[in-house]
Length: 263
Image (tube, rainbow, N blue to C red; front, side, top):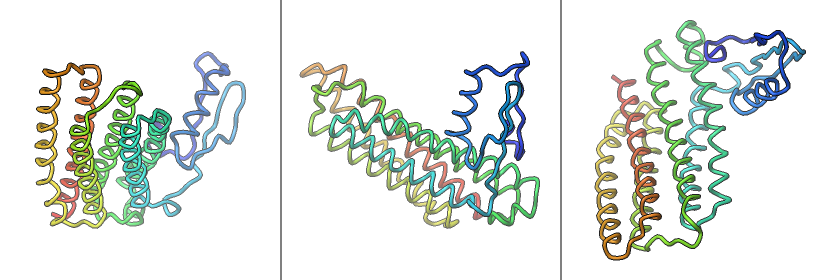
């Protein structure tokens, strides 16, 4: 919360007067995994000092948003590939990638806080008014949640045994749903960064197609369960469908934020 508030130097002290090795390791892990451009510059038995070394011109907000998008998009593709191949090693790699998205999310949200308080910084990051920061906050939180849903797909892949099968008919439709979701995600982020109202408006209409494909797959799963019970696999498939649909819905939120920017 201190990082998000925009402070450049943070002094951490223990309530007991001494920082335990476990607390020190936890702080180092958070700095390494979650706080972009931040280093521990002083470390003693009773205090740790953290300094933010990276400034806005070195990594613009738009660049950070695009990097977040690329990581989250790759996570979704790899999660689907892990499902296709029943590749548990790849699924675990997707889960680990979630930390990278969280790092950029915290970095951008921190800079948006600074921008709302400083008109020069606001202009430097390409925004015209403090209200624009709200649109960026929506976009960043939506990309973060999309990464969480890729995490969810990978987790459910791990719960499906390597010997358990997904029918070809079901998997082909899951792939179609995934591709639609990725198109919506890509177009929403492009519309947001370009401030393209027409493109953003077209994205919102596509989400209904996702829901239609999901309902189609659920009907097939219900039919399969009546013919040959496959409940352990199909229950995980239903959760994966929800993650794919929610990815599209969060992308739609980004498109709506894009439209709000252009009005």
